[in-house]
Image (cartoon, rainbow, N blue to C red; front, side, top):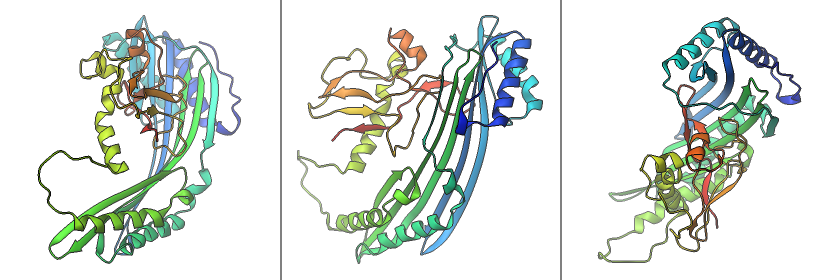
Length: 359
């Protein structure tokens, strides 16, 4: 195994680099032919408010590592929630044991390449909690003042996460990404007599100062109040206009049919329909892992494939599925950079990132 040369500037972390280098050295000594080390650090903040006061504040901090490797021609995986140099020996032994069982699919070594991404990481926001509390209280107040019928909120919350991702391999792969994302959401309750209606509104942004909480609260409150005027209509066929949030919820339910692993498992109705028209000619469906303000920003996936914007449907025609390395090989395709590990304990699946319908 070659020794990595680190020179990545602002994304450098000596503790992680030392842990990774020692892990490679122990793995090589134990006969591991190829090794990938994926490390994720998540720092989060979750705030909830009600009746004009802060109800809950939860801060979280997590650092985990997932390993994939090849030992005597077989693939193995393992993970740790303690990045301690004292744990490396047992960690590699666990990987070797996993490979000996032969339960994992075939892992192919990735070529070494180095890149780092940190364009939307706001480390200085981490300690500024009070402005976020005030933002949350303003969100609730805007919802309550949106209409006379609004009496309270079901929930009002703010969530943020700063994520650091690292992916190293014994062949010299060195990928690093720092990103930040936050969101605010409120559900307003409107009442008129015995009739009660609720409406929900949410927004995602790169940082708290970009959230438009007044508009967000007003939207939820007004939608709740307007829904009080709804009535019963005769059964029949009608043209329907869907709110963007409703359309998004429907799209979320359909999203798995675009994942190639679902197609291989005969769990997608889109099997065999590449190139066919499956939607209105007005529909362009995009998945963009690098979408600014997106909820899941990834410049590379958990297999080290760099990501890019991808058109799944163009003018109603199905152009592509989402792939990881395994499904791409089965389809004689290339990975689209959607090999995602749901959590550090699990394997790599196919998942969308920021899926949206173009205007």
